[in-house]
Length: 244
Image 1 (spheres, rainbow, N blue to C red):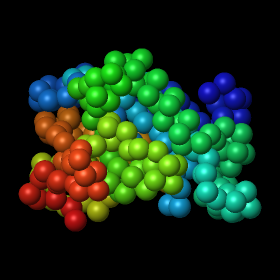
Image 2 (image 1 turned 180 degrees about the vertical axis):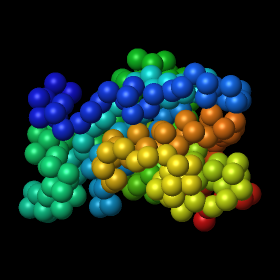
Image 3 (image 1 turned 120 degrees about the vertical axis):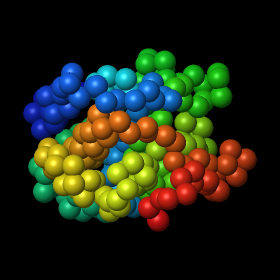
């Protein structure tokens, strides 16, 4: 986070991109959670980027963020170089990735420290999130990718990944219309896009802006999917009307 090139390429001042107007709070309803952790992973073969924004459920303010680049564990250096050049070269951040990427296991260790600092997680209390939940645009991030990455990294799936909120399902049930993805939701809600699409930290900001808009409109943001703790590969989807 102190790397000069990293700081030059990434604007981590979320207060500007995610500023909340006090007038927007008049329609917000009481939520079952205190915090939303907006997550948008990048990387099809292995996870390459792990960005999270912490949103206050009552005020819609961004409380903090966690952002790490992830170094694949089972790809050759040649394949990594080709992959990163294709993925991040077009954004001009491939050098930043190479200079700062760390293994997935280390990313999760640092993430757990970050969660604990915000009193959102305690390993001694079963390892689940405390009055917080992940918010994703689709089920892929936590249904598929984290599950696969934990297997590749030869680690057990952490308990805090056992449930999540698919914003597309909440959007469908609240507005009574389907949205294929983040860009569709932003277009329908007339929210300007910030940053670069498919750069994880920017997509996370944009998903957070959709979340803020839905909160301001009075949406109740609830858990939409939950894994079976005894059989993690089995998932219960909690909304009857959902995006399949």
